[in-house]
Amino acid sequence: MSVSADKRRKGQRRKSSVAAPPADKPGLAARQAAHRILGAILDARSSMDGLTDEVHGHPQYLALEPRDRALVRAILLTSLRHYGNLDATLARFTDKPLPSGATGLRNILVVGLAQILFLDVPDHSAVDLAVAAARIDPRARRFAALVNALLRRAGREKEDLLARFAEKPVRAPRWFADRLEEIHGAEVAAVIDARHRTEAPIDLTLRASERSDASGWAERLGAILLPTGSLRLAGSSCDVAALPGYEDGAWWVQDASAAVPARLFGDLAGKAALDCCAAPGGKTAQLADAGARVTALDLSANRLKRLAGNLDRLGLADRCETIATDLFRFAPGQGFDAVLLDAPCSSTGTVRRHPDVPFTKRPEDIRKLADLQARMLDHAATLVAPGGLLVFSNCSLDPLEGEEVARRFSAAHAGFEPVPVRAEEVPGLEDAITAEGYLRLTPACLDLGDPAVSGADGFFAARFRRCP
Image (cartoon, rainbow, N blue to C red; front, side, top):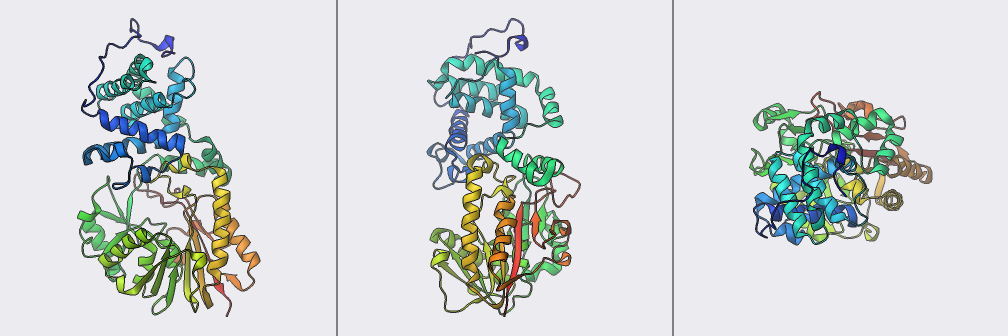
C-alpha cells in the first residue's frame, strides 16, 4: 500500500529515513494515549468520558501530566467531530483501503490528520510523532513510510482539503447522519451537523436571587444573556471554578436546553418535588432554588455525593433529600406535587459536547432506551399527587425517545392530561413547540448569528397533569 502514485511528490522516497524513536520522545506518550483511546471508542464503543476520567480513566491517560491530558482530549474531540472528513481523506490519499484489522494504523493516521488540519500543532511535529508511533507499533511498523508520506501530503494540500470539507462535509457515522436527515429534513440536519463540528459553548444558570442582576452578571462574566434567561460564556473553554460567583454559589453550569424542563413546573414555592434521575444535579438545583422541598433519586451513591457537594456550594442542600435507589423500587407514602423524569437516553442531543456518542451508540440502543423510558414514565406517574404535574424529558434528538414515548403514555393513562408548553414559558424557543404542545429542541435552535455561540443541546420535554 502507498500514497496514491499520481499525487506523490516527484522523487519522494517510499522508505522512511526516520530512526527508531526513544520511548520517552517528547509528546509521543500523549499521541500513543490518543491512538489507544480513539481505538477504544471506535472499536469497543467505550465512552470518552470514562476513558478520560481523572480518577478511573485509561492507564495511559492517567500516566500523563495535566497539560498532555488536555492535549489528548483536544485531539480526541477533534478526531471524532471531523471523523467523516478525516476518513474520507485517508481513502482519497491511498491507492487501496487500509488492511482489514489495521485499526492501530487507522488511529495513528486519523490523529495525525486531525492535528495537521484542525489543531494548532506544527505539521512537522504531528508527522514526526505519528511516524515514531508507527515504528514502535509492531503491526504498524511496516507502514511507517505510508504514514510519513500521507501526512506530509495532507500538510501540503491543507487549504484545498479544508475548502472541500466546507463545501461538502462527509458526515459520520453514516447511520447517525442518515437518521438526522430522516427526522429533521436535509436543511435542519445540515445545520445540526455544522454545529456538531464546533466546540460547545458553556451556559450558566443563575440562582433566583441573582436573576434581577442578570445583565450585570453577563458583564462581569463576559457572557451573553440568552433570551431563555441562561448566560452563555463567549470565547474558548475556561476554568469555570475561577470565575466570579462560583465560590459564592451565584450560578451553576447547565446547558440552556437542559434548564428548560424544570421551569415547566411554574411556581414551586412550598411544594414537594421529586427528581427521578437527579445526578449530576442541575435540575435538582433548579427545583430547590424555586422553593420546592426536593427528593433527589439516583442509582449511583457516588454521583449523589457529587450532587450534594454542588448543592452545598449553592446553599441549597437543606432543601433537598438525596436517596440512592432504583426508581422502580421507590415507593413513598404519598405523592409529589411535581415529578421530573429526565430519563436515561442515547444522549444524541449532546453530540456537540460528546462527539463520541454516535460512535458508541447504535439504532438498537435507541429502541431499547425508549422502552426503558416508557416503563420509567409509567412508574413515575404513580408518584404524582392528584392535581400534580409530571414532566418527562431527555437529551435525545430521536422522536423514538421523545414524542413516541409521550404519545404512548398519553394514550395509556386516561388519568393524566397533556399540558401544552406555552410560548411565553420558553422565550427564544417558541419555534421549538410542536403541534402537540411538546418541546423539541435541536442544536439548530438559538441562532445568534455567530456559529461559535449559537445553538443548544438537543432536548425533548412533555408535560402532563394528574387529574384531581
